Image (cartoon, rainbow, N blue to C red; front, side, top):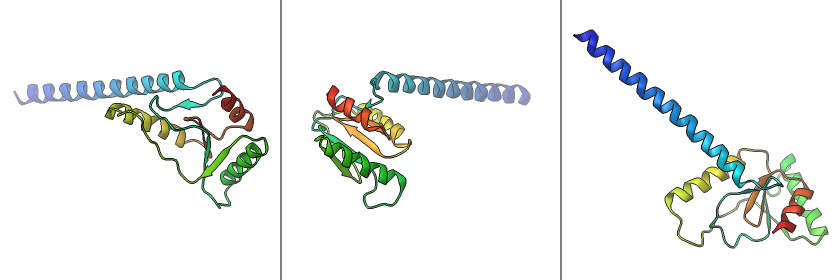
Length: 146
């Protein structure tokens, strides 16, 4: 009798583990499809449909830092400003929502942002879309697109 109970418990545990594994693979697949569908031809990702007041170009990397990423950010700002394209350099970026977003929408926006944030800095926002370490050409084309 003990053996039957142990077999049933082990079978249930294996089924549950298999279900959780399958569920995590499905969630990753859906996330990748979401990222692809929200990325435009210049590689910028639209992280949310509810980000107003996100006009302009914002370059996020540590200010007054000797790292290569900070030097790239400084270069991007300088070059864009030389071409009369307004760009702002900052240490951080704050999200403001216009409409009340559901918890699900907020979590999706955070996941998208975290996805890009794990890539090589600097992060560049162009009118609310984000890309990691873009070229000046990609920034200009995205700026013109908007």
